[in-house]
Image: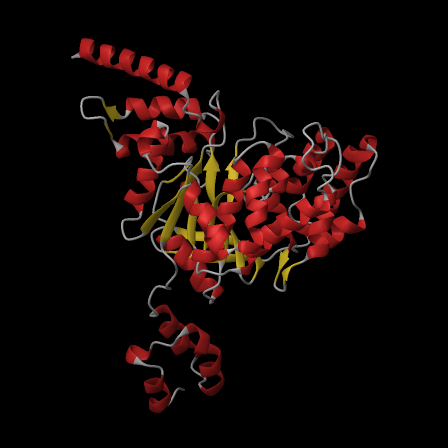
Length: 446
């Protein structure tokens, strides 16, 4: 039993800081008291900043649905800081704070003939330097993230926690291929840089992602900029975007970035695009096989044997799961008013949370129309309740077996005729025409 002196030493109301619990346990045999005291500990502190970016901060130049989605982030997190980054801000950030990557930032859009790669680099740099939540403008929260992220930080018992978001995508039919992964607990590495979190600044994971991109570009600089390269690895998705994030997460360990494992994963995509797509799909399906197992029996070079390789690998994974073993440990997080959430523990300082979904039945074109339908055309204000409820219903209908409590975040990856949410003159004209028709029909109804 704890002595009075030991109890008083724990602080007010017997509250024991998490990091001192083990020490206290050695000198005090009352486990029950320790557990009760730990439950009384205040909610963990973490960086509450939402970062978003686009070439301009002038919201009149944004697609209308982006303005609404961004407003949802602020409405669901009223106590968080919202910080916007434009091209000039990011160029200054690399020039002044990360000069070792400034040349890469300047060169990569010239190499690939697109500026989107710069935005990818900036998202990793922002989280490394500042911490907080990074969210692309085609994402939104359906609920506050305070409880879920707070539970993750508390369970990690450390301030330097990175959280990567697993995104569930619709599986049209059994065996359907999704290069980015279908997500959920079955495919933990179905992630995307659209949504990333760092509990505090200077988490090494995000710096190492940038270093990996820099090293990769230097290693393949003789071919990476060729427009006619067929290898899937030269696609931006594997160089800087979701493919890069997925590989980096999988190569991360308690010792940091395992460069050997990262090189192994990169080399799997040094094939023609069709093979690379197949391997991307296979790596997600084989999310519970560790890299050592994959290295022991890698995908064959001959495409004729890829399908057989996948079948055999799935059998090995099934035996692993049937035995009750997982390549990565899982941790149950208990969240107030939500219940239990299972996190994949990639490393002590990096968790994967399956709290996002991407609906195929609400592509960006339909989202733009929904935004218009939820807008009061006389005041040009969007009813966030109308917009949020419609999205939530879509997720429930499309993912009936997915617990609704997991739908904390939504990602709109399906273009539906709108590439990257483009808002050029033709798209603006289409929108104004649809708006005029809606206004006319509303007037007739009145």
